[in-house]
Length: 274
Image 1 (cartoon, rainbow, N blue to C red):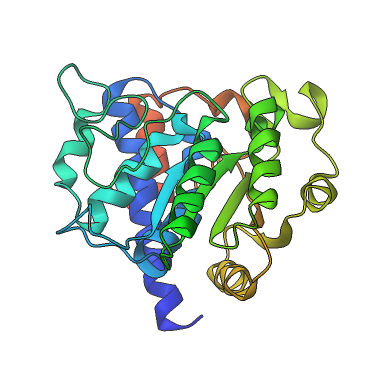
Image 2 (cartoon, rainbow, N blue to C red):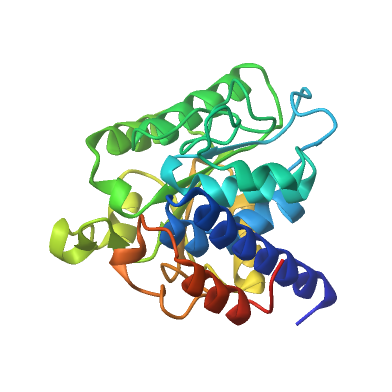
C-alpha cells in the first residue's frame, strides 16, 4: 500500500474511533452505517474535494451532501479532523445546546452544505446544487452519499431521473451498499437488486468499487472524472459496522449506542483508545 493510502487508512481509523466514542458519550446514534462509510468520507474530505476549512463558504468549492443524514457521526468526525471545528466538540453529540445534533444542520455546523435526515431529500438537493453549478458555468463538483435502504424512497428515483435529464456530469453519487437497513436485510425488506442495472436504466454512469479499499475507491472517483455525458454513481460495496467485529454485518447496530464494555472492545480492535 502506498504511503498516501496508508495515511488515509490511519485517518479512517481515527474517524471510526470518533464514531464509537461520540455515540457512546451520547448514549444514542447510528454506528453501523457511519462505520461503513468512514473510508468513503475520508477519501472525499482528505483527498478528493476542493474545500477550505478556513473558508467553508468559499466560491467554487466542491460540495458534499450526506443524504443518509442519520450517519451524521461519520460526517462530524470527517469535518472535525479536516479542521472545520474543534474535535473536542464531537463528545457533545446529541447534547442539549450542542451544534452536533442527531442529523446535520447546515445553519450551525461549518462545512455542512445541507440539513438532512428525511431520506431522499439529500440526493434531490444535490441535483439542484449540481444544476446550479452548470448554470453558473462553475467547475465545482457535487458529491452525495446515499444509503442502500434509502433507495426504497420514491423521491430518490425522481432525482436520478432529473440528473440524467440535465446531463449533470458534475454530480457523483456514492451508494453505501452494505446490504442492511434498520429492519434487516435489504433483500428481505424491499429488494433494490439489480441496483447497477436500475441506475443504468436511468442514464447514470455506473462504477462498482470496494468501499473499504482506498486504491479501489480512488480508481472509481478517477473514472467518474472522465465521464462527460452525465451523472455517475459509485456503488461502494461495504460492511455495516466495519472495523468493530461485533457490529459488522449486524442490522441491530443500525441505531444503538455501545455500552462501556463494548466501547472498550471496539477501541481495542481499532488500535487503542483515543
